[in-house]
Length: 208
Image (tube, rainbow, N blue to C red; front, side, top):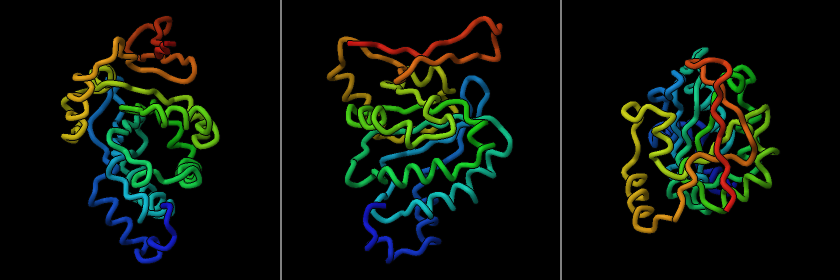
């Protein structure tokens, strides 16, 4: 998305075909609240050749209709993302979020951000509220390890690329004193429909 010259050589329809071929966006499985899962693989995103216009068109035509009127959660895999190759830019991210229909935003239950880097967390702390509008930012949860994701997502219903497991093994070799689990930049309360209304689950924020 960062190179206008390269974008001129690929039509919107060709960009859509590339997005589909790479399976960057895939509806797969459910979380433990019964919400459908939209899996997004950041490492596969070809930011240099795919425009925000193509992404929005693909989502509008292929993904949002497939979600129908169901509640859903997003599992975003940040594992292995390289800023120069996979980062679309602030303007593009804002465009994609702004183009998301309000009824889709309303049905979004949570965004699980797997394997966040320090740079990505600093970036979102500074610009997250400007990019993820319509209440989306407040649904963001950082997930440091797969084991914490499985507490909220049905493990057997979502496919993980091999490089995600490879990264987990690397983390095992250099395991920190404390794994933070699921965190946010802000206090949030999640109400689980399967338990009494008085019982709530708080996202964890650890301060080192």
